[in-house]
Image (cartoon, rainbow, N blue to C red; front, side):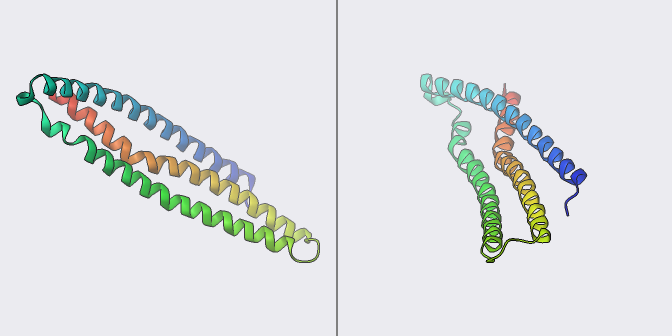
Length: 153
């Protein structure tokens, strides 16, 4: 049985992890804003003086996005599959309990309640983990670009 202290401790830990993810999202947005501003200026300069353009930097734009979003998608897809599998397992358990042909016993109801609470907690934790895993490659790319472009100035 899942005791309340463990349940709320894990719930609070997952909420704190989500707060950290929100902070990294804020960093990503700030870094992206800086990168877009610098690269827009580079594109303007290259359009005005084609021989002086920084084509090495400009050629990085599309491949780095494909790489970062591809890695994010893979991370998210794996966890989404795990969540879908857990939902189906939970539905099977509910169905088996409902299709017994008799009312569930107190022990069965207690076990089901524990299972439902654990399922809800794991789903909450996984939802936070999906966000963090999906954001990680994008955050890494955006913040690395912002740092690199700041050094170039």
